Image (spheres, rainbow, N blue to C red):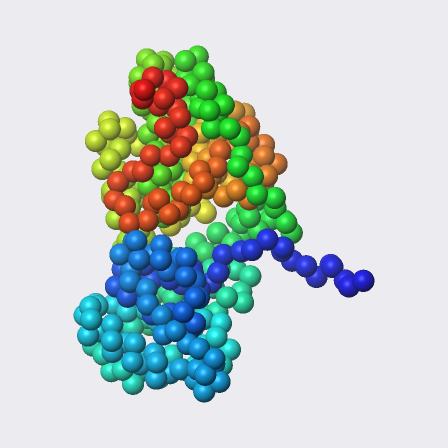
Length: 372
């Protein structure tokens, strides 16, 4: 029998190529060119087109794998420039183009276009998808889209995110069984019961980038249900919605969400960071709770709940909401009382500019009498 000790992880992990594409989106690129086969990263390419990033492919085939496809890439750069006159273009390598040693930079030089081009030499052979993010950000810095300080800040956040996932996230075990978590109506029932009993609540939004459009609905629903049933509960809202931090697109998400919360009469009592700071914003939330809000009865954490150190919330009943089916077991092992999974959250939060209703939020509203 073979040696299984060298198996690091068994379940699929996010791709560095896809991570590079999302980073180009966050940098407000107009077009991303995937230099590889037509099917590479197809699902995410389609999703990103719903979020105003045009994604095209050079559609390399068997002949190009042997003889090279640099001319294909040069022609595609010229084509997208003629079609859409983009202000910023991204070129992303794939396994095929990187294995044959394709020269992305020379193709860009040959095209001789006016728009800046972010060249991302990446493939999917990395265990950490953050390699794709760093490669995109480094290239963006090299062409003057971001400065050195922002590059180093982002790089530090990615290191924190990797450590978080390896500690209590989807990379924490060799294999994690996917789970739908606790039944939403049971969790909604419990939250409403706690509100009816006047229990004090720390309501935390610690979400990653655009996922905040739906996770913010959990924070909103808790407040709406409390008001609707005339609850005496003290509710403190903490959120990583700093509008002055992050890449251009990401800061805009926070502006949108704060506008919607304000229109609904919901105030954020403490800002714990930006939407790209979720790996460290959880620690800020924990420190804030310890210094300013000790002794609360329960907490609802939406987004990346495992970023909040459990020792800071250990005395409370902890209800968490994630969009990762493989995150359920780690959260339960941390000591969270209930874990809800918002399935299909990500596709529903691309291309929007308002808070999107969540399944748990809708269930809470129906059960407390706001809907129906």
